[in-house]
Amino acid sequence: MTKRENEKINSGLLSRHLPAIFSLLFLPVVLLLLAYFEVEQTALLSLAAVILSILPFFVSFERQGLKIRNLLPIVVMATLATAGRIIFAAAPNFKPVLAIIIITAITFGPESGFMTGALTALASNIFFGQGPWTPWQMYAFGLLGYIAGVLQERGAFKRPVFVYIYGVIAAIIYGIILDTWHVISFLRPVTWEGALIIYSQGFIFSVILAVSTVVFLLPIHLPWTRQLNRIREKFGLTASTDF
Image (cartoon, rainbow, N blue to C red; front, side, top):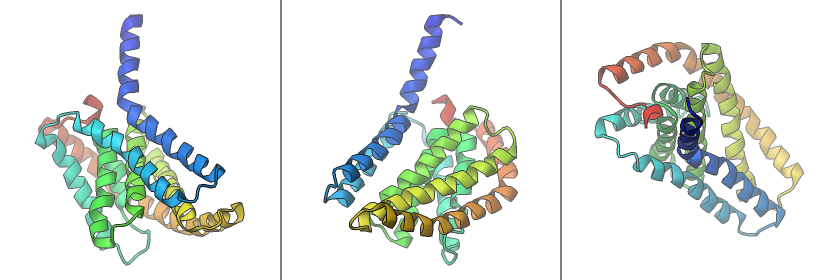
């Protein structure tokens, strides 16, 4: 492979992952600046920041010009995740949502993982209630789905145990992101002590989510991915890795 071909491939990879890079850097930087300068309208500005972090994913996905049949897996998996969240509504944080998002990302790629996560948060909150927390949940679920897809492409999930480990890590990260929204929206004044209390209280729910994610991944990971791969190959569905 020539140097020019390598540069072309690297340029394509950078262009493809640019929305994720933007989101990973933009939101944390904005939050740090808001905290550093002690801006009064932190909650409103952070909400705007998280919405801006999500938009590039939707714009990038829209530009793919996919056929309707390629969108069906995302719709179906988002519907399953939404139904799972509603069915287990009585059990706080013990839900199959992350497990289904991870499986979608593993099978159909990072972009599908993001869209499934974001749409699940948006759709399920029609039942649980929409609010300023919705974009944060869309961002968290979507980003964790995207990362799962990238890790699958890099060969990180060759053994099932690594999928389960990621499920635990993803649940902890999800909790941190939502606790951060809680800190900047309700903690006044924002102090290290107050933030530590919120994060420590939220950690309990993150552990419950981590346990539930692994509990649901254990029975469905291998059979679901095998079946979804068969469906993808049989009907010629385009995986995100081929966009």
